[in-house]
Image (cartoon, rainbow, N blue to C red; front, side, top):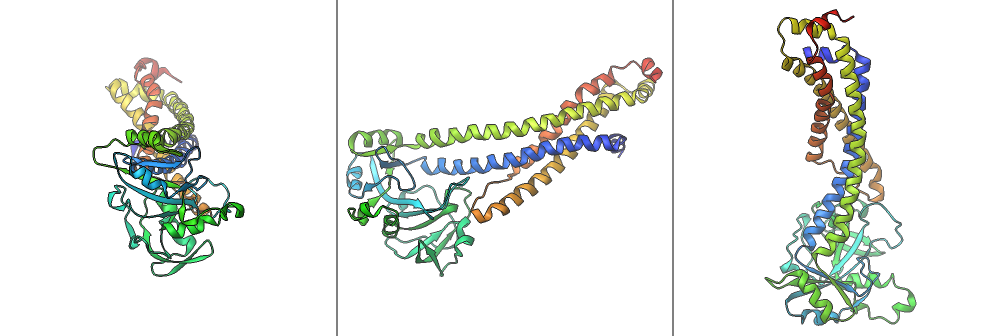
Length: 386
């Protein structure tokens, strides 16, 4: 209680100082929650691609169907030494008319499910069950699309103007599956063909359309080496191993995260400067008090501890208030963006705890110089101070 009384001797000044820390922590939490969301999605992608090879059309890699492959290529790829199984899939935007948005857009994915027995990236179901191979007219819906589609197990949803029965709803993964609708390959091929220009559509075999092959290496086979072998063996395709995702996506988002955290930390450091000012003024105003304490036997260490504690309390109060406001801002932001199917913020325990700890440490560091200055005062000079 004595510490709080000392801290709030000049209420307006201290509240302004705490406000500076609060704004810095608010910025750290909001921007950090954006970085955490991106990191979680990238982490999921890294785990998904860690043990497999992705094959797309040569010179046109795309997960949304801008490149076309023939289903007949599957047998060529499967014949490559080291290949255990090859799964064919079609990927495209759930809404072809959707504009650009921040984050993962809703997608439609069709698969022949040949790779299911070998898939290491497991997804839990909040309700229902997985799709069965060849089960037409049925879908599994990602958690973030349940409200938008009005999805309910056993009921029907409308996808591209057609009715599909929902057999499963995915548990939240915080990665790409949350924004996906899964169906069998034949259904996806038919819907995907609708996006093709009419001139092209009349010349293609819908049942032969594929946008991606997922290759599962045999035990002991290096995915990177297998990707190189496929590129050398099979014409007209581009095979990429796990490093492609890491280099193209993970490294780019790492830079973005550093920028987000950097801006937020700069804001918080600016708040720390106000702590230095407040503690310096506090030491100046309490010079005679310091002299009295030292005259009756207070050690330099006790003086330093007293003022560092006060600086730490300022950092703690600013950190807690900034965290609360940051969580509120992130929550309201996600609610406001929900209609656009954008889930932009994720306040994780490490972000919450780290923000408060950083604010306390910043307060302690900012209070170090004023504390040492107070401890070095000579009692005689301090008592004469006016």
